[in-house]
Image (tube, rainbow, N blue to C red; front, side):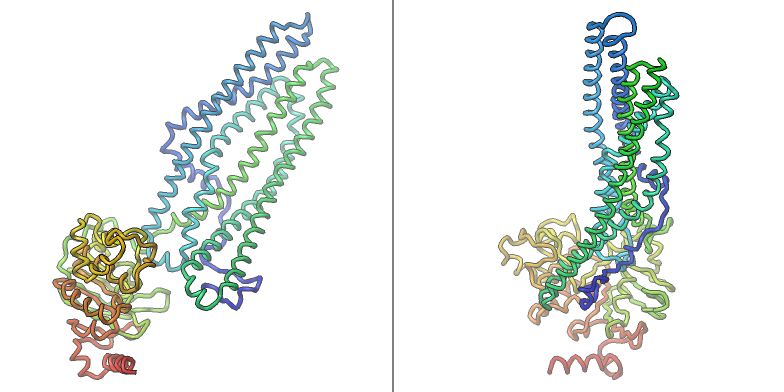
Length: 608
């Protein structure tokens, strides 16, 4: 686990992840405009939605005007008797406006949701595509759960903004502007008196904005940590149960969950403070309306109908202001998530392609490491001036103690990382000058920790080359002696395996990875402790398969088993990032140095 279990019950204990540090960026509209870029492909589809929004807003503004007309012209006219004919005509007009408003709102809501979901789809797709391109250094410092929460929770939190928020913002602004113009046009003094409270409301609400923003950012951080811990707990369940740490793990999760709940409650409470501010301001505005409005009626400056109309418009006036306050809260939530999303999108791959990179054509397999210096962390070199010259078709074994630099050499060859100094060349070409896809498509790799995807056996082997036929898949499996155990499974090649291949033994999973690598037909093959978890009988089959697999290919093998490395053309012994010995098995044994000591230690272990 990432945290010290002895501290699990400490209320101050936390999983500290580097990417969960607070993102200190001021609120700015440029960030909002960046989000709006994702709506630009749907401009044409938004035009009828905006037209319907304007139509619905205009009908909403017209209805209170008809109420004034009904009172002053039909119910209580200044001159003449009440007119039912006019009242019926006005009522019919109001009914027609309600129908238009209903139809326009229905259209607006339907298509804003459709467009909003398309925008969310595009954003999630863009984010996922980007993180596919990020280098290993990015994943080295971030737990999988923290990456997962960006693609799921943080993107989901933007749904309200895109499905309703943007159009509602425009609608409320149009409605608010329309009401202000109407009120000031009807009676400038009364309209101005009512709106005296608006600046006061904005002063109070502004003080809440920063607190709300950071509150929601904290919620996102807590949720990210929960997801990271969940992912880690599920993957490490065997270790948790093996060491009887379930209670401690549950206690730690309960603490994290409780911490998340508290942060959510704090953010939600701050959000809810906007409502009372609007209600108090609305109440004060209403009191001013009736107090000052009554005075204006007595002085014959306005009619009763105008006062009633003002009352209707005042109700419609505070509603959009309330929604704009809620919209701002929604925007703050979206900002907290968008900052985290754009943090990933702005992350540049540390291993990238230059503008002049060209495809690596079919290679022979000459590989050269030219005075390589590499470090995972600054100031702590993992390789120190390593030079290796491998001819096409040669098999190279890399041996040495843990941390000596064996896997680092492999990582540089696949260009998962770039060296700090020096070059890696294939057929004389610096691999930094070729496209990454063209390089890795010609380099096959089999790892000790074989990853099996959820799906069928057939699909997992085909992952090596997606256009392979069923017959080619079977031939690859036969070549590595995987066919027999596959056919013994309930559905043969169509047997479904769960994520990481839990229904298969470690040896069976590695056999599948051999078949996958063989199917891809790479010119350079890497075996990273690929036979470490295979039993002796299976290893005999593998040794035969390796003769076919390695034939005509340049190969790099990291292994400790003598049977795997003794037939290598060249054995390179590494120690603390330097090459200390180099030669074939017989030459190194005769030298009696580090390699001989490793072999003797292995013999002593096996005979013990």
